[in-house]
Amino acid sequence: MREHLLPFYEERDRNIDMLVIHCSAYPADKVLFYLEQYKCSCHYIIEENGGIIKVVDERYSAQHGGKGFWRGSDESLNKRSIGIELCHPTLGQTSYSPAQVSALIELVKGILHRHQIPAVNIVGHSDVAPLRKPDPGMAFPWRKLADEGIGLWFDPARKMDENNVAELLAIIGYDVRSEEAVSASAYAFCRRFLPKYVQLDNNPQHLVEHILPDDFAFMQQADFVETLQAVAFVYR
Ligand SMILES: [Zn+2]
Image (cartoon, rainbow, N blue to C red):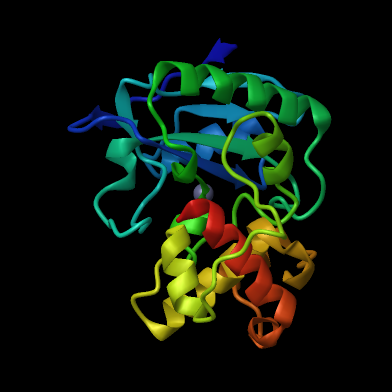
């Protein structure tokens, strides 16, 4: 691991109980350039080749999450979380390299050893900011991470007996405080658990500006509701 420490951090006023995964369409040197330019930060950057760069010490709060909401709370995500930025040219729409995924798994195992982070609080940026952020994208290997003991996956055979989409999304942790938030959260849910309903955008820059689909017909599909019921079963 190498270091490129940035001064954009604050003291924490609460314990770390959350991990937020991000991705950026830029290589690490450009990520660092933009972080400096906008006075933002994260704790680690992982390059496509698996190289890890430490940016802010875990004991401090880094500026990576912005406004967010998860499991009933909209208090500062930064203060309670560790943020990892993955360099990925298509913004997580195509496979992450095995070297990058292995490096991430090793890094996160260490983090989970050092801090008490509940599995339900291991999230992607789009999970906590579904109206604003598409990262780490539908190709992010959540299932593989769950196999490694990082976060949760679901069993399609075990489902919650509940049909209300907003209710199910809220049980998992998503923001359902407005109709717009429910739709955006449903799409963020698909990025993570049902990627076949996520549209590919060949222009990562365009994707950052238009993270939501043109229509939300997927929300009427039986397998959308069934997957939601199965995921809610493990997050409840
Ligand atoms: Zn992000």
